[in-house]
Length: 144
Image (cartoon, rainbow, N blue to C red; front, side, top):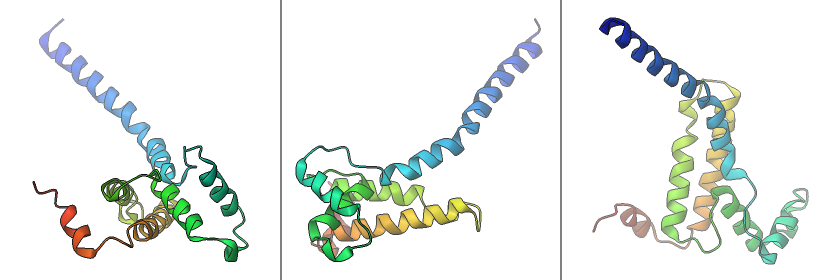
């Protein structure tokens, strides 16, 4: 086998491998976008009670601050014991992946991403409402 033929086969295998990887990007992207809005993985009874009260969106008057906090934590995918840094990292991950500018103009994906970004921003603001603005700014610098 000539060197040119061997180089061609190596290049062809690389291109085919990358092509197979790229074909699955669309499915992975949808899964990642839907992941933050999935159900929480904890099994505590207080969180289960909060989730059961969230199932009735027609009656927002019965919602308490705990219900809103459980919803916010579910959106960001963080636990009840998560500190500011974990909340910030979860928000940044969602924020980076759900920028509407990353999707085709006027597409369903763009609308879905905009809705996820809106929910994530609300959840981040709700969970960090007691953190001062200066602490939010300077803790994200990661200066040692």
